[in-house]
Image (cartoon, rainbow, N blue to C red; front, side):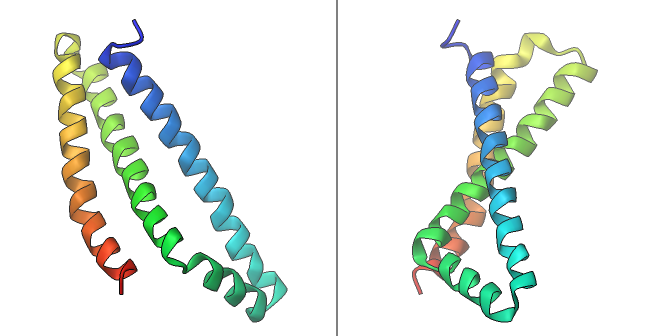
Length: 114
């Protein structure tokens, strides 16, 4: 049961959802720095501009892409009643997500290494 593609998709969907909520909270923390003035905001942006956080942006990209593409997979499975293709759709989601993350992650990585 725990090795099925359905369970793996379920776990990945939950993990990416939690990652996106954590990012949203971090984003609100940074934007909340505006109330402390430009100096507070600039300090927070400088802290988040370090190479480590630039690399985490690739993880954020991966979470957003996987979560979105997997949501499309769920819609296809629900509205077109293609439950016999669940495993193939899961692998298609992984491949499409991987391609999109590589296409978007390479420019982020190149920018982070400057």
